[in-house]
Length: 177
Ligand code: FES
Ligand code: FES
Image (cartoon, rainbow, N blue to C red; front, side, top):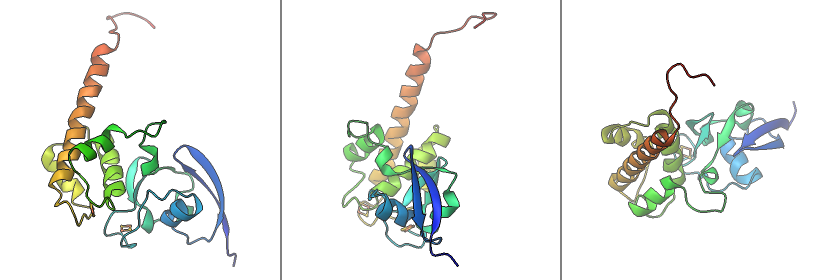
């Protein structure tokens, strides 16, 4: 039986070739092999959601996945959210402005949960957002401000999308490209 396996991972747009034990979790690979320590580990058995990342755009608990399972997937961690110059993304700014964090331990998980969820459900209502964020644990905030932050981001995201649509050149019926 081999102790290591060659695994190719694509994380935040970069490809990595790794020689790792077959049962190494995605969370451990991200944190310890790739140095992406923004992904936090709390319970390590699928309950708290602190380790949430996006796997093919879907929020997933990286403590429950073996890295080898996601070899052909596209993975995004919280580090992918910031601007190229290191500035906060709009989602992160909403968390800061709405006091959606206190100690911040749970925050990367909530950010990736919201990022994945709103990409799929841009018109989510506040009540739907409340249900979704209930899947992750936060011991500090009481959740209200997290719901505020995600709801605020959802509104800003819709407004930005609408202005982009309004600014797009219109095509006339019968016109050809
Ligand atoms: S550390 Fe993965 S769900 Fe808690
Ligand atoms: S801000 Fe401390 S656990 Fe959520």
